[in-house]
Amino acid sequence: MAKLYTNKSVENFNDLKPKEETVNFLLNYSKALSVFNCNEMKFEALLN
Image (cartoon, rainbow, N blue to C red):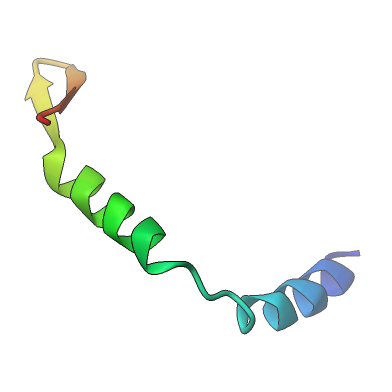
């Protein structure tokens, strides 16, 4: 069963071409995201 899924998914990865605006959005989001560790907890802050 796993063989069927992997064969199809590998073929589909070659066709992925995201728009430039999508790539820019993800890059800007990752630049603005900060993760703070406090004791045993993690806090995420979007500094935008």
